[in-house]
Amino acid sequence: MSTTIVLTGLLPFVVLAAALLAFPVCFVLLRLYRNSVSRGMARVGGSDTASLESGAGIRTPAARLEFRYLDADTKDSRNQAGDLSYQRAVRGPWRASIVYAAGGLCYSLLMTAGWLLATRDKEIVWSKLLILSWTYFWPVILTILLIAAYDSTRRWQLFGAYFAMLAVLIAIAVARNPEMGVGSLPLYWVITNGPATVLLFTFLIRPIRAVGPLVLVFLLALAAGSQSVLSVAGANEGLLRAITGIGLELGLGAHGIFIAMILVGMAAFAFFGWPLLRLLGKRYEQKKFSEQSIMLDALWLLFGVVQSIGFAFEGAAWILTGPVAFIGYKLVSSLGLRWTTKAPTDNAPKTLLLLRVFALAKRSEQLFDKLRKHWQYAGSISMIAGPDLVTTTIEPHEFLDFVSGRLGRQFVSDGQDLERRVKAIDPAPDPDGRYRINEFFCHNDTWQITMERLAAMSDALLMDLRSFSPANQGCIFELGRLINSVDLNRVVFLVDHTTDRAFLESTLLGLWQTMSADSPNQSAGAPPIKLFRIERQSGSELKTLLRFLLGAPSRTTPA
Image (cartoon, rainbow, N blue to C red; front, side, top):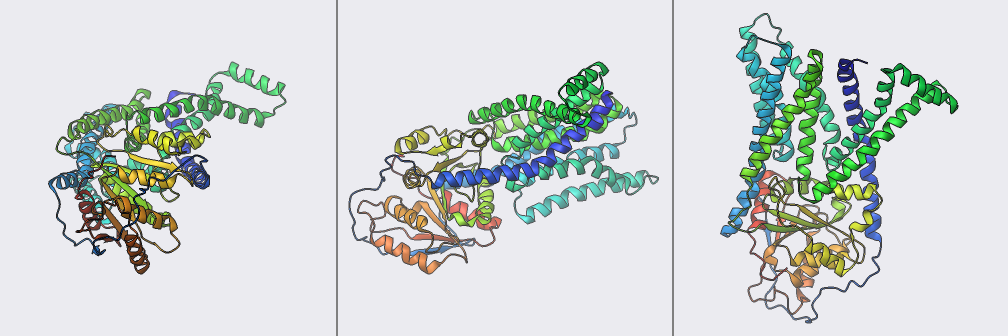
């Protein structure tokens, strides 16, 4: 089998098969993962998990509880540290987008240069170069969509600006070359970017984005292995005869031998693919890269491989154009991130504790996805794992533990284990300047002490009470512990039209009257309960919410 056939026939098949298989495989694995976590949450740890609650007794509060309803138009007074953190949170995704755009420009120029050299095009036409470069710049738009442009207005503006520029360049090219068909250049764009874009969304859509790149890596190994033995044997008649003889000795027919060759190849590549995944998981734990960098590297490498397949018709070596362009993107973006994401010296990173009604499911996932895009540039997020977000926040080493049957070691077993896990948290950011999400897996008898411990060590707390009702007894416990042990100036409660507000207010009033005597809220000027109304999860709502959370006074008690 010729090298050109392998690169232009076998390689596209491997990439296509792996990407298409990644979609259903991710859904199945994540469904099993969610079920496994739910079973672990229902179990009992079996160890002493004494509450952290104070024994100081109950005292009638000196101040009357007040409720303050907030929304996107509410003004707030922030301290200077809150302003600085807010600026980092809001600007962080867009600052990173500029860096990735610079890396994407390097990728685009290298791909354009590769195209010119591979086709040996000696006529330098600037309109052609601009169209080529702008075509190869397309992955930058997808990158910005994933990390910054989460609202529909920004997305339409981004798409509009890109395709408007593309239309202008095509119009100039057609005006300079009237013999060129009007539809030829748009068709070239579709051929160049269409396949990779479609494949990208098969494993980077939100429900499976957290594990899509890992699954794709393993499936690429399996797909390549399924064809490896067939390709090698097809190019070596002696080897093919030997394999056929062994198959016949084992009683296999022609179809059986064919299937056995595929399975042997898959097994051989899986043997090497699994250690590669474990290595990725270990390097992630060591903070060599973030989950976002894994996702973006998968995006750019996929485009590099797919877009350079056609170059192989000009010579096998030109297939390396895409990987070389990817390396250029990686070098530029890595240097840019290192320069723009130096550890802040003006104020310390913030820690946010996220509590919520687990039944929110998709709404909780959508809000969290938007909130984390900003907050992770200002500090870390702590949360107790639940069925609503568990597949969104899954980390590489957690997923690999699940596949290995060792997910149980991720669960908090008792108070000592909890302290060990808290002390093991690395407060430093990842190389891309984003802080980690610290997710705690809890059994039925350890989530209470975990919640209390995380509340004590957090700078701000957000409790999502959308869909809150009398059925949410776990949330009622958390409300009581917040009033007893956390300064309510640091807490924001999220509500919408689905919140049973009458029941919520009566519950908070009852808990307020039975407040612990040593509660930080036992002061004469007790803070009001801040209830933030959010309906559309728009950019303005999210930014105002960030202002209140990041403007909260710093905790004064040690964690």
